[in-house]
Amino acid sequence: MGQLSLFLASFIFMISPIWPLGENPLPGDPYVIVNKANNTFAYISEGEIDKTGRVATGKSKDLTPEGEFNIIVKAVDPYYRKKDIPGGDPDNPLGSRWIGFDAKDTDGRTYGLHGTNTPKAIGHFITAGCVRFYEDDIIWLYDHVPLGTKVLIVDTKKPFEQIAKEEHILE
Image: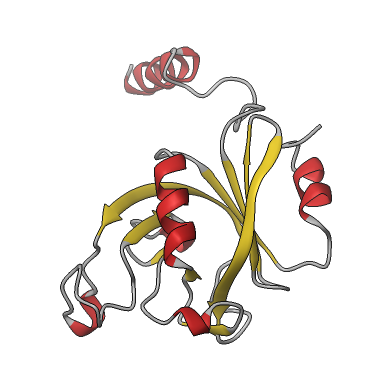
């Protein structure tokens, strides 16, 4: 009887309305692409590339994880645990915004998109794994991406339009 109950519970869970149905993300949903090959990003919404810019990524190619991830944490003036620097402090390397994603089964507090207190680092391979943005760009992005937004990190010579079409984000 126990196995039958487990089967029925699993079946009901799979057909319940909370189970994700259809495409994810849906066309038009916000989507962020980071390209490690040239340290750039694109924000896509409503089927258009709305914003692009420069970023900084990992000192070595393996530090910034590649793949599609979900934004699961957002914070204003994030605390920098590694060196015990409070949010809002000018010495805080995370800048004014943190947008954490679930790479490598983390809780969104290990890998993220964030600002920087060193804007000259943008465009370089310099981070411990996160993606650093100019402050104006990360504030703009923070205001435009809800929790659950997908982030795709790639290392390719392809343009954003081609990447987005291959991922079925653009038509």
